[in-house]
Length: 492
Image (cartoon, rainbow, N blue to C red; front, side, top):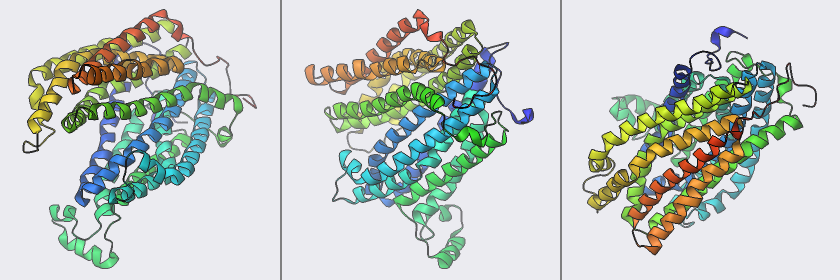
């Protein structure tokens, strides 16, 4: 194993602030790049018409749930590897890497088989009309995504394992490769070599004619977007796993580590299952909240679409810092440095508070202008949509300071292995506070979508306070790994 290619960050000794930011910044960048997949698909599929765009919306409800569950399970690898590395046990960290890869791959194959068969039913469940073109497009797209789910999960696994080791740069580099590849092949696989605007923009119409004459390829339509995503994710996944088994990223799993051991799998499930459940419940909760907002009218739903985009952009720094905090907490608890783990949570909370105070202060005076960026001025009822979206910035904006701290504390809990507590505290924000208050505001007080905005603000503040009280109890700092030394024993 070459130390020259091990890009992991030392977070258990010396200064804490700088390594915390060095760990988190690539995660934020990866999240921004991840948006590139969706933007590229939406842009080029949009050339096929409204039914094609609707198909992506129907499919995404199912795909997002699938990704959420798979991503939740991989976090177990992050936590266990971080704590084993902190404890100085590289052999066990590598063993966990192999076990996580095998177990999540089996889950992916099961998802693929069941999902492929149930796709028509699932599309009807999310509202697609079986008699419409959008339904057919959505079924084809979703089935391809299910067939290639293993490639997506493999990249998630590599990302999670590397993050636990303390290397967030290598997954970022692979994400750059993957997104760039997707952007290049998306228009070709979707539209083919006949009338493709990409070639016109690049001044390559003659090349386009030559390629069409040689292949006759007219594109795969919506299915092409799914193939492009799976292929580009697959390339990154294969490169990542090659680096993993070569030992060049620090971990060095062997083929024997791929043979599942009951005790290790149980540990992965103990940590990962609550996170997967949490992600599933949150994905379902967002669907319910959208239905509540729909009661307030089409303009309310359009405004919610705008604020969702804004929220996603704001959420990225908090998510990146929270995931960096997971690693720092995990490694320091593994090294039996409880005070340093607690300090990481406090430091991250201070950083995200400062970031959100500045962002909200800058956005507050320009709420309507910011909302107007996301909607054409000539769109019917555009003024009302902008008014609703601007009201969100004014009402819910300040509460993002609490949301940021809330996410950091959840990251600390997950890094310690307290994933059941993190699940309950995360889910309460949506199901105990946001959705019930929104229902009362819309149906009981007839406040419309503005009532939902107040529900969002209250949920962020209340959930942060509840989580803060739990964190201050201090019981979350009890590590989840045993501090044995040496490689795992047979049957472990």
